[in-house]
Structure formats: C-alpha cells, structure tokens
Length: 185
Image (tube, rainbow, N blue to C red):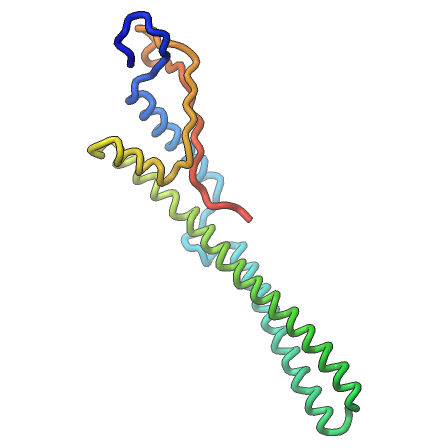
C-alpha cells in the first residue's frame, strides 16, 4: 500500500487478496466435486466403457471380414469364384477391412484421450485440496505463486473503490479465477 497521504492509488492488502483467492478455490472445488460424478479410476468411466464396447464390436467385425477375405481365396481355389468375381469380392472386403482399421485406430486414440482427460479431472481435486491445506505454510511468495499456477491459468483482480478504515472486512475488489482444467473434446 502506498504510504503517501491522499494517494490516488487504489490497493488491497495482499493477505486479503490471498484469502479471497483461497476462498474462491475452496468454493470452486466444492462446486466441481458436485458437478462431476467422478469414478475412482479413468477406466471405469461410462464414456470409456461405451468407447471400449464400440471397439470390441469393431474388432469382431474385423474378424468377420478377415474370415470373409480368407473365404474368397478358398472359393477361388475351389473354382467356385471366377477371377473377376474373386477380384471384385476381394476388393470390396479389403476396402471394408481398411475402413474398420481406421475406425479401430480412431477409437483406440479416443479411449486414451478420454482416459487422460478423466485422469486429469480426478487429479485436480487432490491437487486443489493440497493447496488449500499447505498454502499458508509455504515460506515465500514464489512457492505460493508456483503452487497457485499449478491449478489456475489466471486470476483477474478488479478493484472498485477504496477500503475505508471501518470497511476492512468489506472488500471492494473482485476476483475472477480461471482454473487449469483438461480440455473437452
């Protein structure tokens, strides 16, 4: 704070701002826990289960098509298929197999991404709880700042007026917290 009498600077005590940041984080954490029905692990998510079911279906389809492809060779060797029929059927089955392989690759990547996203959601809760527990025990501003930066992208501080001598507990500033969260698809 400026020590000059009648200074036009509008400021707040750092302790007050820190307390409000931590209060805001605590409130955000409470809402965040209510918002997400977070499972115990990233593998037990409904979204991951659905993707894994789709992947299983695609793999069964891949096996069926591979069997069909093998069958086209057998039918050619037995003389049931002419060369033209074989080439047409073979090409069609190979194209379907390529589409299935692309789908399988896409689903596998999507599952990994969803597991990482969910794991990040799971990890953010204990991280914020730890900050709330240890913040005031940290020895210096850099440590506190680094800890806050691990869960916040930014904090916007807006000061609307002076705190009079009797308005100490009625803050005239607002904070907007921007938590660091995993991106949604």
